[in-house]
Image (cartoon, rainbow, N blue to C red; front, top):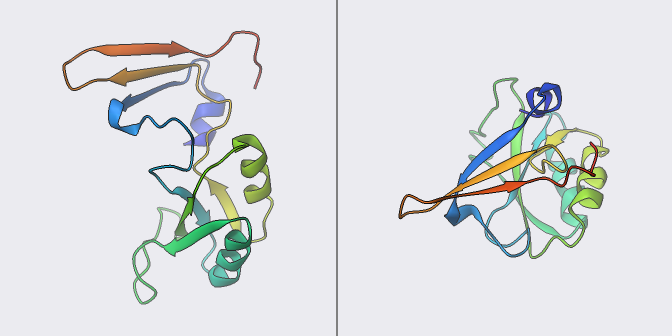
Length: 128
């Protein structure tokens, strides 16, 4: 997904209002894709970053991505510096990437249960 997002001239993310949080880390875990070999060691290092780590699926039958990797769901109580956290995660041995899409979206469309949509635009002065 990030390869496509980086290659896009205009990245539009569409969500429902239930995905909105006042601070990242509350509500949804950050998915982290890891290579199967040594995944438990990678999970321990991720835990040291301050999150609760859970292998998606089970230890006997883990969920596998299209590329055969595992997903670790990392639940942080709060993420004060999303860009800094993303940098710390992606440099860890065994990590392929994480679900933080920092600075990639140009436009966010938020759908509400009553049919309304809100549109938020990224500040044009910000660069990727």
